[in-house]
Length: 217
Image 1: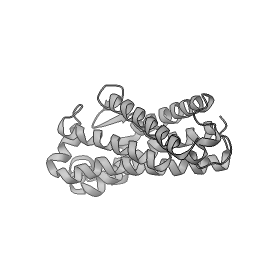
Image 2 (image 1 turned 90 degrees about the horizontal axis):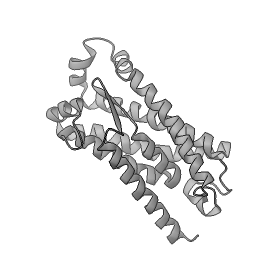
Image 3 (image 1 turned 30 degrees about the horizontal axis):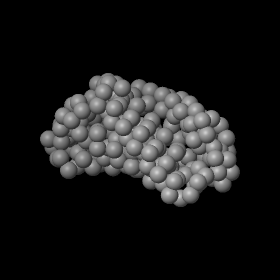
Image 4 (image 1 turned 135 degrees about the vertical axis):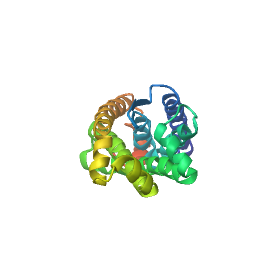
């Protein structure tokens, strides 16, 4: 497969994943609202993009995820109570807090998958680890951006004078664990299926995942 066909393949994959993510973002499939936060399954298409198309692909789908997340701040595709409140405080910082963490998440996931595959030579293991970090990094980046960009608002409305780290852990506890478990399992299963369908296990795909040998499930 030449470079032109490989690029076309990547674009097709990214187009499909974008459609899937938009469907999830604008239907109940993507979010499960619990309190002020939400358990999101939208990190899974980001992980799949990073696995199939590398860091750039992960960043692109992560960026799409970030845009849909910001849209909820202004009532596009649903309303996020926290997002709307942050938008009222500072629209620009609300965009930064919603968009940048998801972009960075997707970018780093591409490198995580490549690194894991070089060590394990196994798609299933590498993809599962990538799925875990998809949810883990999304939570870490999202909450870090929240505290950094809206420190005063966060302290006033959520910490109630208590320990900030403890407050963050309390807020994201069940949500984060649920996201990590679901993303780890589902990403591993999907990537293994793609490998068995010969969408990841040919020499032509090696540049996509940064490996010279055939991928193994």
